Length: 380
Image 1 (cartoon, rainbow, N blue to C red):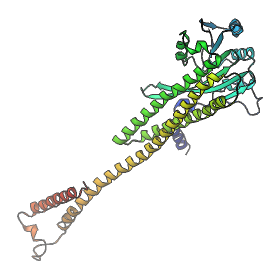
Image 2: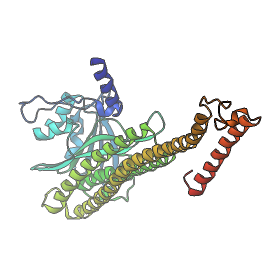
Image 3: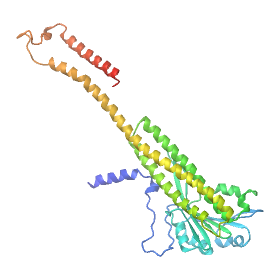
Image 4: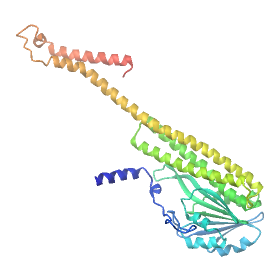
């Protein structure tokens, strides 16, 4: 019984990829609110910090080891973006949090990588939690959806970004900063925060393309040949869509609050651009709803395919059985032990020179006649 339970558990685990099955660290019940505990699974060799200092006349990129090195850039009139990559070293992160006097709840949410995407407004900062969802190729060459939490803190003249890995998530924004004519160099830090959020939302459309491609691929496979492994793929795809939708839905409400409410750190000009981000998320949600309906359709198609395949098998077996019924009847008659010498009515064919070929020919003609009849009826 125990062995059977273990086998069932292994089959259930095989349905879910390793990154979905990994148990994240959880904060103990009763812990003080604001307790910073890293709950993720990605770990870097060290936490990387980079200062991006810019205005209309210059753009400087300065890697730093200690957050205090950013003070000259924070104190001047230019805009400063501090990019932090790696969340496993709580002590080093705490030096950043204390330097900018971030609320303990912000600190807790930054390293809680299972956090729901949201927007929160504090007296000295706007805190945004996003979920980077992008396409990634696995070992088999298939495109899958990869997720990573990104946190953005908008201050009066600075922006902080925190991410789990050193993936180049914001390369498009960095390239735009190198151009002197870009709005990033002219507008305030709130526009930079918008640009970072917009960059993440733009990746959602590429992730949607991956989901659409996977749906089309599974659909073609099901039409060709329904197999049990396709059901696993359908469930995995359905789970990704639910997770995707959950991330976008909550972020959409948060962005809407920045547009609707009076937030001192968000200018009127930037609110116009935030409306564009909001519109993009509405488009993503509409596409996700369509994809979800298509996945449900895949399941119905899979079950219909199996049913049709079973019907085809049963039809062939029925036809074979139907053909052999009269043949069995003829063989049964001529297999009876009646003596033709006792009576002329007792199987005179047994003494006939062509009796055996006649019985075989009769069977063949009956089989041929039934096959022709089935063909004309469209049963075969």
